[in-house]
Image 1 (cartoon, rainbow, N blue to C red):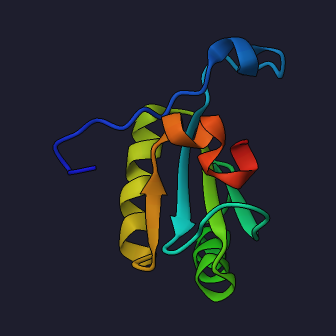
Image 2 (tube, rainbow, N blue to C red; image 1 turned 90 degrees about the vertical axis):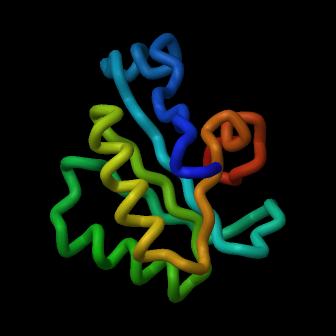
Length: 109
């Protein structure tokens, strides 16, 4: 998507409410060439994860060609970490949440 488009990040509140969360935002990335199926994946909670572990998650995604999912409390946090990840992971691409939720990204299918 171009920078002028808005990405959907909010997960269905009916699905997240059973876990006590009324608002959860997700941002998914996958390595270029990832055709689906079983894959390594890294999941990071924002803002709970310390900065050094976020850097470690980027490194693991690069090293292991892993998918990367960020779970955020707010849309603003999701936008911020998506921007950071786009810069930190040139060999990955962002996956629209709509595609991820219909099985185009392993951990959400």
